[in-house]
Image (cartoon, rainbow, N blue to C red; front, side, top):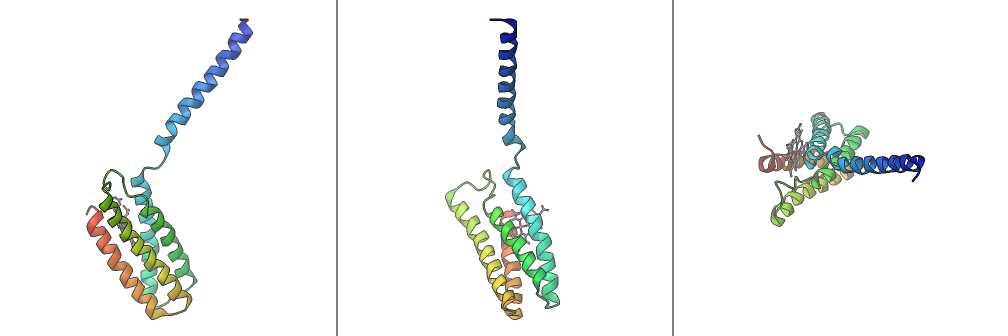
Length: 143
Ligand code: HEM
């Protein structure tokens, strides 16, 4: 083996080792389930604050639809970030996802009510969302 060839092989081996070790560290860089849940709850919190304000002044509009969309997307992500270390038993997973599914269904109902300009139905959805949030937090959130 010529020194040139040895050097070339050494470089290739080094690149291979670096690629391997870098790909090995990627899972550690990814967000944990808990961070995904917390991040999406924060988004839901800020969107819901604005929706509640709009409900008080009975003024649902384009911005309400925007906030609802943020909540729908975040609720779907939160539904699947159910902290594997805490919620592992099949029955617990079903309970947790059912509660999130109720939340998502209510957010979709509210979207239709706002589109139809049915402000009474939309305001009733805000009350229901509040109840779902409270029972979810009572059951799953540390106080
Ligand atoms: C309208 C609906 C909801 C809103 C606006 C909302 C909002 C929030 C907010 C603002 C936080 C605090 C986030 C932070 O740590 O800064 C939070 C945390 C949390 N929420 Fe919700 N939430 C809703 C529904 C739910 C439901 C239905 C569940 C369960 C089925 C749930 C489970 C949790 C859990 C487990 C945490 C704690 C996350 C952590 O440890 O950081 N939430 N939520």
